[in-house]
Length: 271
Image (cartoon, rainbow, N blue to C red):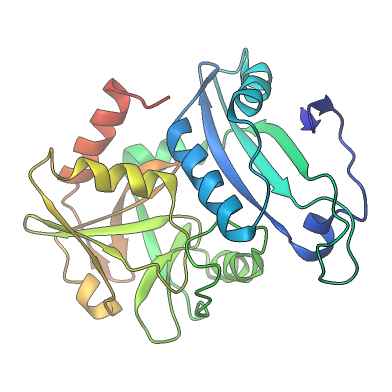
């Protein structure tokens, strides 16, 4: 099902700046038993993206109403919210863009994530590096060409997922997920101030640490430092929390914190 500006349709203007220039942002959320999972975090993401990209923020109540209409009857699915500047302007200029586009879709849930949650996943390490872009760092913009190329590398290498470094060699994230590692009672996650995406599940995990008696640190660390971890896991809004069983030849049998977080999500889902 597709909805554009509140109307059910599967067409959009070929002049839309989201298509022509990647001028917009998006968020992908999990639908479970017709409910919008982690919606407060997704909304905050859209607020920040619209502020930094100078897009008009849609009315939250109208957006939620449209999403709930689309989600009704779905036991497990994913919904995508895409906001673009619409059509208009000349070249890069946004003058003349009079109506933004709000595109909503419902798509099948990636079933392999359920297996990943239970069994964990082994990661590779990409050779390609993420470039710095402080103007867009942290945002989920429509410009995903780096991730397209990284996904190609993953598929050529036969990995299910992989770690990506920046140009300076610091660990940043997975290709489709945020990254955490634990040493003793300290949880670490990469600094995303110059590149990478601040995921909604990443935000939720970081908020749980005080209640769990752990300290969290945002760091710029090389891969060699992360490899010394007691435990590693990856997150996104669909996969939720997935234990990492290994990275290249290193193995990580301890999944205690990942399992604890999975239990919290199962007993107290955020809608």
